[in-house]
Amino acid sequence: MDTHGLDTDRADRFVSEKWDDEIVPQLVEYIRIPNKSPMFDADWVAHGYMEDAVRLMEGWARAQTIPGMQVEVVRLEGRTPLILIEVPAYKAPEDHDDCILLYGHLDKQPEMTGWADDLGPWKPVIKGDKLYGRGGADDGYAIYGSLAAILALQEQGIPHSRCVILIEACEESGSYDLPHYVDHLADRIGKPSLVVCLDSGCGNYEQLWCTTSLRGMCGGNLSVEVLSEGVHSGDASGVVPSSFRVLRQLLSRLEDEATGRIRPEGLYSEIPDERIEQARQAATVLGDEVWTKFPFLPGMQPMGSELHELVLNRTWRPALSITGADGMPPLSSAGNVLRPGTAVKLSLRLPPTLDGDSAGKLVQDLLTQDPPYGARVRFTLEKSSTGWNAPAMSPWLTEAIDAASQAFYGKPAVYMGEGGSIPFMGMLGAKFPGAQFMITGVLGPHSNAHGPNEFLHIPTGKRVTACVSRVIAEHHQASLKGLTRQVGVDTHGHAKFGDHGCC
Image (cartoon, rainbow, N blue to C red; front, side):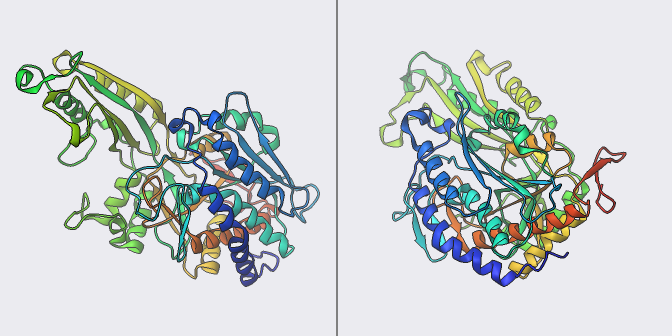
């Protein structure tokens, strides 16, 4: 598709220099800030780290030479701040009212243990083409990449539609503030026909990857109490049931410990044929990298041998992780005591199309009804969110994404679901049912978001930025032809676009 003469080599150079000269130094400073998401820092307001991160990004954005750009930090009472950037249409017809929404977040996951001796969550370290530290890839780069993509077009005089950039500050806590901001800013946002999200991953660093689905999540704290105080294990064992064993029984209601399969059928949803085929294609591209990208210990094997089934396991099937525990002293100070209670934090990933609220109630009832031995069991549900399954992609966007991957990677784009959750996507899908979605990111093999030794692969950051730039240009051309405009819905309830759009 014609992009009014976009010079790919020139755009590549511009983006690369912007990253080297400005974006990487900014991300170095950003990584130093321990601006943990509110779920992990209840005193985030008093600590002021979130404000430090906002000021850093706001200052850089205001310094960019984009005609008519408005940068604002929006603050609703009692909520995390949000950075709103409005970029007017560039060299577009006066009556052109189409819009692109670009999204990212600036809050971070907590420290996590296991960092290499010379690395740390708040210690930016550049090794070769990787920038280590918490949050650079997940996804502090989003605001910088979004503006750099727009600048790359304007530097060549390439037209684009109006762009709105939203950078929130509580994504890692479930984006509970974001709906309030989207409602508050509805008139200023408008009705985007394309949503670009830079908070996802890539199967490798060799081509552009686009996310087709995101799992939902049910998370909370499960506690079991059997005594008012600890007692001598020699005296009580065999009489008093262990709180750990009771906890284990309860978890077995939810998960088959032998296979990892989630037991309740109500926590599954049907996998669309298209997503199964995409999983096969992704598995073909990745090969054993589907599982070898994880730091398995020698001799460890994955939970299956069929590669495409492993892809579906991490993208469309429910799975349980225990991410924390209370009530158990460290081994060095664990005496012969039958402990009064045990508590664990559950992270249950849900299929993309499963209703999060219903899943939360199912899990709550499953774990708390009829507790073994009459133990005191509590399950405090912290978050329960519905996932997201992308609408059918319009031909113009499919062509644009593939052309961008070919231009800046030299390989075709690949589509695959992601195992993580981005609550914003489901909300946007509901509010803007006619929008198309391009969800991509830089979190590739071994980048280890949320874990130790997290890194940003800098060359991928550059290429993703350049690809987004080209797609923004292609969007404008499609918009002028009426291909981005929703004209109704088909008999299946799917949006229909223009004369040549898909349905």
